[in-house]
Image 1 (cartoon, chains in turn cyan, yellow):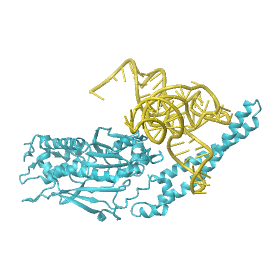
Image 2 (cartoon, rainbow, N blue to C red):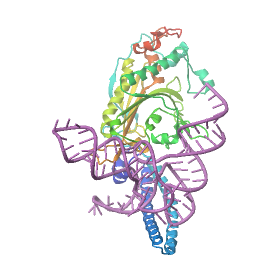
Image 3 (cartoon, rainbow, N blue to C red):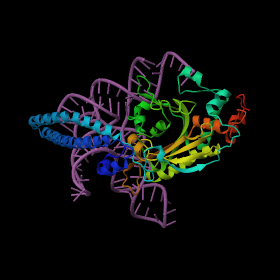
Image 4 (cartoon, chains in turn red, purple):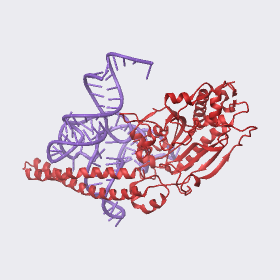
Length: 430
RNA sequence: GGAGGAAUGGCCGAGUGGUUGAAGGCGGCGGUCUUGAAAACCGCAAGGCUCGAAAGGGUCUCGGGGGUUCGAAUCCCUCUUCCUCCGCCA
């Protein structure tokens, strides 16, 4: 959510900066409902003031032993006037919030202008793509042949876009979870959290998924519960409604969770394999920081995610997203794209963003800076990134480390977690 | 699921219809003292919305929502959360 006073005062600039991102209709809706609301609020406050004055006069008259009936009669009328106007203020309040909460964040000045992913900027590349003496296979062929993933049986359980991991496949997934959490907690300074995998509407509003993206989420019937689409939701909302002390910042959190997504708009995309699933596992990184450090922290958080790819020796490139390709709440986003030789393309494996105060304003996460800042609490900046998506890491390993005989070598960093050096051609850890 | 109790500012905690936006304490900030620090003492400081160029006003907020009343932290209804006991249970 943008600051409403800022939006009001800099409307034309905001409109220009949102050229690749916003539906201009919501901006116009905001202006209309906001000015109506302010007029109504001013009016109602004048009436409230009158009511308060009359009440004070009643109290004084009673104390002096005088009859206050005339004042009471007048006050009753004022009370009725206030009551009649309250309803319209409520309606206008909701209209303002409804439009405001559908306006995306402003892109940072370093973000390239663009319409979509074709305008993203490659800003780094790491690792050597593996050479194969044979034609590398996609992970679904390798995984099914090894018996470490099963899509057909998963369909019996839940339908398409689900996978069952078996044997070495399940163990590889678990090893990746432990490896990532150990690196982030042990070496990058993150605090490990195990949150609920369900969150209420308020949390999803706080991080920006609601109200606009309800169709991407799974809702639990006849409850206010949603399956979390990412650990960003519970981790960021951990501090909702709090005023933090500056010495508490920065807060760095990491969590393993499954992530649940409807993928409603992606029919026909990535239908094979484990690339796009209704449920996938992820280790998430979240930072809550003060405003002046957030862009440094974005570099650090992105480097923390990159470190996992480097340790696993997976080649990747780093993309700076264009204004048109960024998510709704982000001010600046780096995507890390891992090389997938079986598919012959780079694929997003981590998305690291600075949301500035956009989420903090919605979730009401503030910090009290007492020195040189007038003591007023201000909104913190929030950041998050995948560190990494485990499903996609799993398939990247399978594709990059595949061998001619159909076996898969385990990256060195992972061997102590699996107690093995490879998944042999029969699908057994060896 | 049943029966009770509770929710007040960054934190703790007074307060049951009329200068109580809220005592007191802790923590914070500024100052006095000190070579410096601590201690002691003095002072400052809730959040949102709104009007205003500003200075400065106004208004709302004592878990959320609604009601009673001229007037509500205080009375009523309702929801949520937490605690205690019972039941069930991984």
